[in-house]
Amino acid sequence: MEIDLSVSWLGLSMASPLFNASGVMCRHADELDRLAASCAGAVITKSCTLEPRAGNPEPRYAALPFGSINSMGLPNEGFRYYLDYARRYDYGRGKPLFVSVSGMSADETLTILGELARLDLPCLPEVNLSCPNVPGKPQTGYDFAASAALLDAIVRIYPKTFGVKLPPYFDPVHFDMMADVLRAYPTLGFVTCINSIGNALVVDVERELALIRPKDGLGGLGGSYVLPTALANVREFARRLPDRHVVGCGGVTSGAEAFMHILCGATVVQIGTCLYEEGPGAFERIAAELSALMRSKGYRTLDAFRGRLGTP
Ligand code: RRO
Image (cartoon, rainbow, N blue to C red; front, side, top):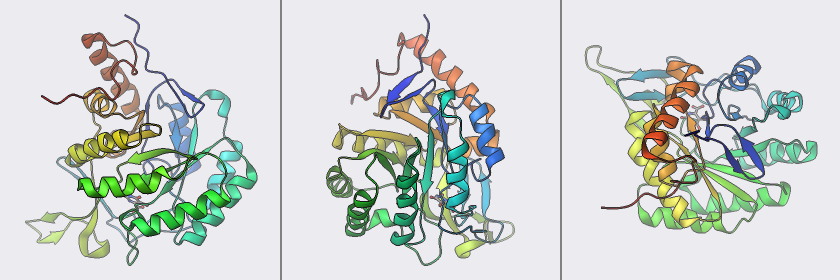
């Protein structure tokens, strides 16, 4: 049986549902080029701000037995760099380009999106409502009124389809509240669930030190630790927003977790920590594992099982 991993969504076509999570291998043009040349189905840039940022002091990333902790602090080359990249990008290769936007203020985000609208490029913005690592700045996605105010302003300045990257939520009331906010914006085409679980603390017993330096050791948790939380968020938002797409992100290290995300309702799946640790060969490996799993279950396409998770 010929397995078909292709996905058509938002008017885009992807040969594979897998691509990078924003933040991993996507700060510089050479990294983005390597993603585009890999087996990834799409490419997304590092979240950008108005001006370039060096980010937080090192050490700011640590690999852990089951994932990672990071407090990068939004290091990026400034939005003009990524818009230049988007201008040069070869869309004809069939790998959609997403530009992650994370202004240091609402005004910055709106300025960047206004410029993106003016350029009218075929890339799509993923607006990051969930950066956990800028000292003194709370995650917008945990403030429902602030999220609604930002989205109101975004749709006034940006008329085309866009998406948002959400933090993980942990209570059905909060899933309801955020879904109610998001439902009001018809041009919101996708929600990416989840960003890292914010403000975790990992301790080195021997040295009696936190593993990373910024924010006295607090950082975003990623990788296998966050898989069940990611799956819950994917399933709960997919249920509440049936006419939007959910992009699954969190804890994918093999074809099995990619399958789980799609079974929970994800249209496509991003890979963060595993890509950071393994490099872009992860896309070919995980796609092959997903194909083998689908073959063993008799599923030829992703549509055959997407969103079909049952309960015993
Ligand atoms: O740069 C970061 O520290 C960072 C960001 Br913007 C984000 O959205 N999520 C994350 O885990 N790290």
